[in-house]
Length: 309
Image 1 (cartoon, rainbow, N blue to C red):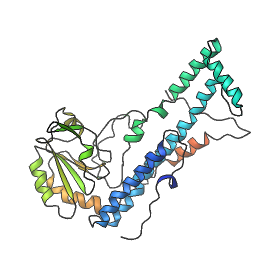
Image 2 (image 1 turned 180 degrees about the vertical axis):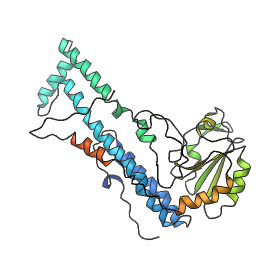
Image 3 (image 1 turned 135 degrees about the vertical axis):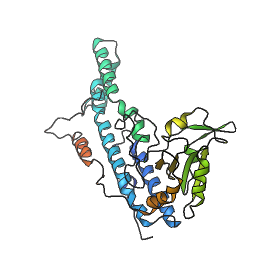
Image 4 (image 1 turned 135 degrees about the horizontal axis):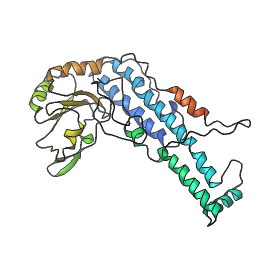
């Protein structure tokens, strides 16, 4: 493997702490190339797999940076509703807080205004779809033509999905009376193939022909029971279909029905082909707009973001 360097963490993206996305994004930055490097070093993948890092992570990082900036922009209205402003002394600030807390008409007005401002900043307090709903649209994934889940552009509306590129949905399965999460069944090395008991024999025979990649087969049904039926409803396949999951727990490929003969070719494509040219580098224009809206100079009033209903 040729010498390769990856730009990750705070070296790759800087933004306000609002939303806590510095560490969240950095962990994703490291988890993404880690399994790819391991696969290349083990001889299971070619160097081309490493080229998928930027096409996968840059759009995610760009979205997170923009979201953090927009979160920061919604803090100023909260402070203004409390009666706080730049340049106040500490004493004056506490005096304004006392007015806000007082049993007076002005205190009531400020509390109502603060409640509205806090509600408009809801995306800073609840942003599960940013944290868990992001997906890799291009890279070491094979799209199946399905549409993203409802609300995929929302920060707060999260819908688990097994669509290729998304994180495998967490579902509790039963193993001898003990709960086990589908996420915890993903092997840390190699690839994991989730199948149903109905299609298990076909997929296991196909897996036995794979000799150059570590492949773990997880069969749901029998010892691993989907008692709630949640896995069957969220996996997006028939009972004879399968999900191929990467070590970073993102779905790499989804077969709606038994296609065992394609497994070897799918693995070859995922592990030995670079990402197709896409230009999917993330919406950096959104970052520029969000950053500009936070700038304040002596000749310009602060620009606050549009209220989010």
